[in-house]
Image (cartoon, rainbow, N blue to C red; front, side):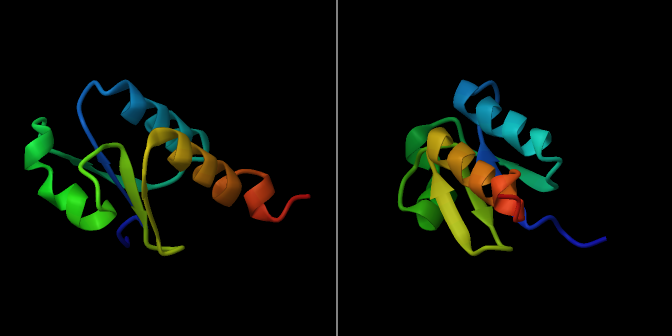
Length: 89
């Protein structure tokens, strides 16, 4: 089986990360979780990807999108994988 297209960078018990988790599950999307360092200053991987050290962050290899901020991610997932994003008018 191939690797999921979406990589989700997150923290344990982060309410903003949980918001994104619920949306990924709602659309039954396969994703891999990467738990990041709790210390903001140690999140070098996330900074290299998004230019910020904040989580949540996702990388969607199927669309080439990399983004952070839970509201932006949820909006992106709705537009890309929700009914509107699946070609339904």
